[in-house]
Image (cartoon, rainbow, N blue to C red):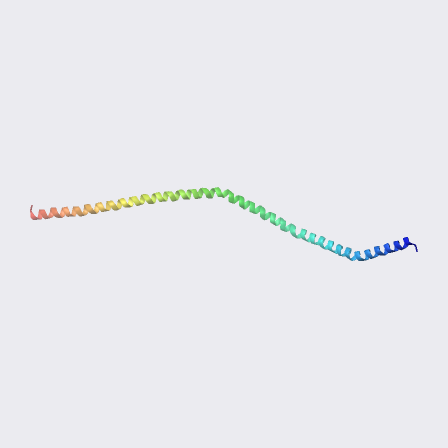
Length: 132
């Protein structure tokens, strides 16, 4: 056997050993690829309805947000009107306080006139009774 034939035989044996050791790795890689493929299919099938539902929820949230932003102006107007009403009620309360004070003063004057009138009437009647 020549040196070239021995070298070819050694190369063939090395190639055979390489193939023998690579076959389990190749089979394992194939199983992994199949598993990844089935996982991708599962995720695609499971996530599509979920993504569709999430899109619908986002659309509803945008609608609700738009409705809220539309009514923000109404709420501001209502709060402004409420503030003006509070100011008007405060003014009315001050006016009622002034009128109440005035009524109290008028009541005091009327009571003074009554007492003074009674006193004058009594004095007049006493003098009349005494004959003056």
